[in-house]
Length: 393
Image 1 (cartoon, rainbow, N blue to C red):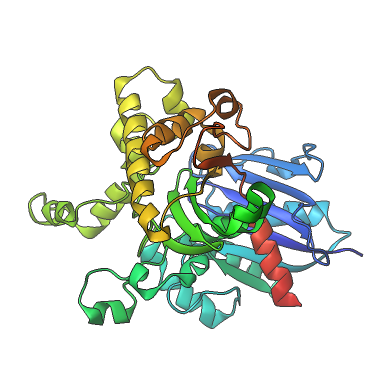
Image 2: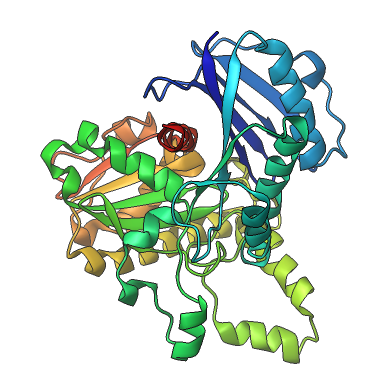
């Protein structure tokens, strides 16, 4: 009987899963899939290792009102029926915030779960769903080992200076510091950089993880040196429905002059801002690119203006720029986004080859470009599987 690992990545509106062999280091999943559009009209899809669509069975019709916990329970039953001839030995979870205590993959216990619960206010779009997946698995198979893998862990290589806010030292000592996120994605990209850059992989690289959640990471020696996100996953780049960096005085104004309470401001900053707030149309970059509405173009232009500005601000941390890597949903698929960002970086020597960019090629920089520019698909699930194997062995 084959031994397998299951990975679960429960996001704000999606649930991604993949199954891997437990006894090999392969990054190729035996099967993978997701439940998308949770909270609106959930849609299930799954494929085998060869990309062939799998029968949806009971996952064909999902209730619009189904929450993460209910959908996870349904998914686990679907997996059990389909792969009953394989022995599941562990489940690995992407957990967005590990705080100061958790920087490496950790076996989930009741006490660990309680600690992770205290971090929910720092990642309200993700952490509750990450923990709901853990609880659903525990209810399904109580004795099955579960491993939490943290998005914040990759950035613990940064210097203390890079992690500090200009706040009273006592607050920093309590843990109000810059943690950084999307670490599983950056970890994967760091691992495959030699395939694209060869001997330059350990050079000065900025990775732009652009999706509904978006951030950037400046790397040297394939380690995180600086990143755009901070204490929470709200900081830095403009995102699908998150505002990114904002003047703290705006928050004081909303509290004091507009009479908003903390929960109203949280909803505004996390769920009503970003591409959605500026466009008034959608948080989906693809939808906005297809729209003729002027506000849609405003949102696109602001997203890319902010991205180029923040990218430029990361360059000093690594002393220059040898390569730029685009990844994640927007980074991998939006030629317009890559073009608009890179057009603002020509002073750095960045130049794209339009035809290669338009077809989402791996290398999209022009021959004259002083900075190599790549499009590299990310694979967070492969990192979770790798960490599970290491933990179990």
